[in-house]
Image (cartoon, rainbow, N blue to C red; front, side):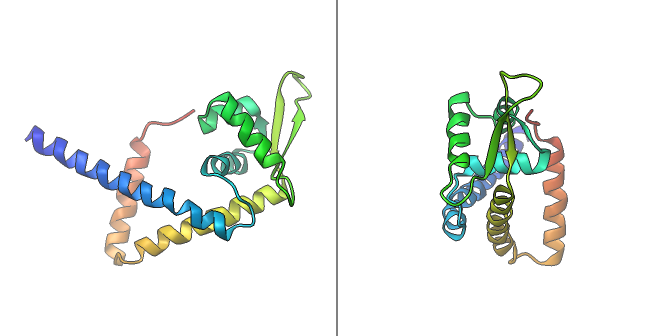
Length: 152
């Protein structure tokens, strides 16, 4: 019985991994359809700022779960977009050693546009499911999300 459970869990993990791979490969479509050429990690940083508001570089780095050097590259990239910066950085008024990061209006627009493309890709894939299967999938995905390890 244990072998069957382990095999099922491995098959489920493999299917979820394959879906993730499809999503990652879809990022190029999102990048092509967006006026902002941003990486997946940069999108996660922008999405984090959109959800949680301004934060220090250190807080953002911990939430996105990247190394400090990578966070620095992401910050530089998002600050120096050719049309408009997607974020602005300023010295924290309470602690001059810290830098605050804030989403600009252009950054908010970039998040919405990138998200729309990603969601459209997922919706297209889910379109093959009937109503009952979609409801069951939503129920199961919520269970998984509620039991998944939380990042900081």
